[in-house]
Length: 281
Image 1 (tube, helix red, strand yellow):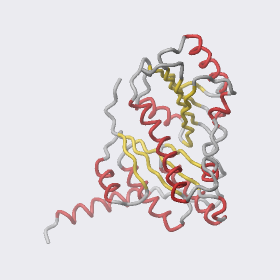
Image 2: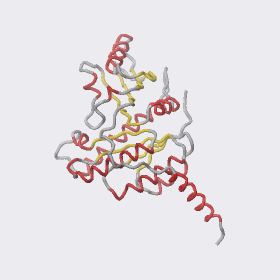
Image 3: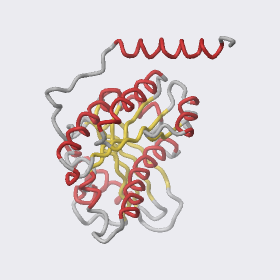
Image 4: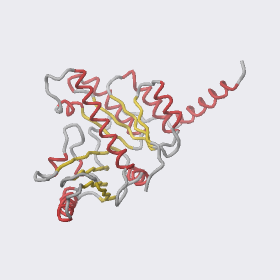
């Protein structure tokens, strides 16, 4: 079943593009919000922007990148606060460890090329969920499935795709990445979407299902999707969405949640601004 939901992606920079996207958002759209933590001067803007997006009643997924450890303890402590702010205000959050992202490049890689690679990895993860929603197959996973899945267990998401012809190695090693959560097999809920090419037989399909269910024995299977990939060979493309996993770090003892009245004040500000626009000079 095709979905009519609109899917958007926003960065924390308040460019004209981001402003235009925010204006287009409607209830029940899906919006990804990307942010790199560490700059204390950006915390208030992060809070304001997320509060504004929350008012739009969209399904809001934060994409958060922790800074490198070598950038200093103070910057990392700031990022921790920003992470929990994003978790508080978003419906769910996907986080990336920058130190893990470093393991995907050679030490001689230029800073510019490294940043391009890191951004591409984040983009690919976002595109994975977009594809899951938009892909039609024998058993579909649609926007309503993702919405219900997230509502059942708000918090960090593990989202990853693996493509292989054979799965001779332990599945956990094939699925693990240095920049995503390590405890994904301890999740409480699981969505699996399996793509298969022309020559995959039923026995291979059965075996990969058994191995996946064994690996994620602690999780409740929320939904299993499958779709045909019209290409030669015996390959699988497996996408895993896991929630109910732990935060990467404990909540700081001095962390303060956004006051409930903040949303009311924000609504009043919007109404006042609109009234000013309509008032003739």
